[in-house]
Length: 389
Image (cartoon, rainbow, N blue to C red; front, side):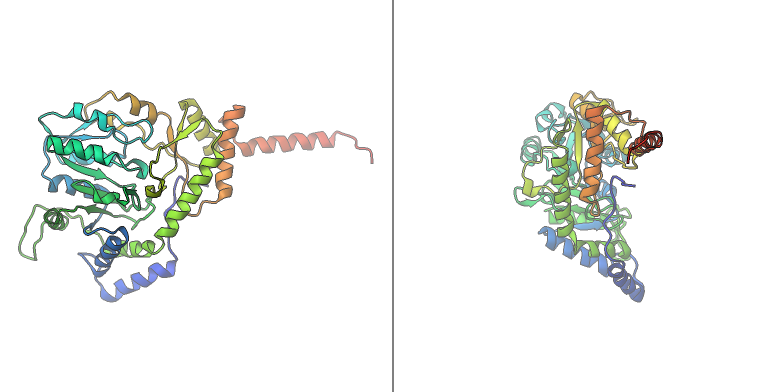
């Protein structure tokens, strides 16, 4: 079986060494030494002055919205994971969707201004599949209309914009370290800001608002993370350059093998700033996409429709007509991509998809079944044919 993703896992001994130290200290959570060590190593690797390690990427978004004291409407993208929208609603604000760019799949800055009203307090944009948004254009709009900016950078570990970490931008940037991400801590996330006062506020907020044992500085939540999760992050940060390089190598091979398929790929802009976290493929038609998905599934190769359906169709939001997004969500999937995937795996996946396109084979019949049928037919022919020796 080939799933759409697998988490990178270090050698067991490497993780066990950290776990043994946890056993010795018996300090399991509440801002332990491994959490602090991970924060320092992440800041050094990402070349950032500030970050806070939190329990997951959704809590990161919720803390960002609350820390910025946002109210009313937040302009956002319909093409992202559900947490981008649900966090807005959870915090008592209203998501206002604008359409996306057809080549980057990111929020379209040219459509943002028309969505601004007196109730608008912020823009929450996602760097989809690790491809940075048009940050300059978004920042220009935000400054002219006095809006805050939050970036959902859940896909962005290692990604850069103008030679700087994507996490540097916006009033607050957030990310996820979930097991599906190329850098993970099993469960986890982070918030980033250049504003030291805002950082201090969010630090209080992630720990119930505690300012010491008997004093509370802010309304808080339990956004902390544990020593066990930090231990996984400390292992994986040692291998992150290898992980990033392998993702790029696999992605470029995929694109070469699929060059004759009726698909297009995300426009990535600055190749050096892209992290190859995902392999999204946009088909020319939904029929071809569904046929390829079924043919792959028959061979136990599993893709995923990231992101389907549009967030503008969720039951707890106002429905919005967004033609570009509506077209893309029907035709896009992410192909399997993870560290232990081989070139042979990619070649097999590409052959199945090209075979569907070129020969129109029924997607309900698996290739292995067809091979067995052909073998039986050959065996029958040989058994009934006299061969002169």
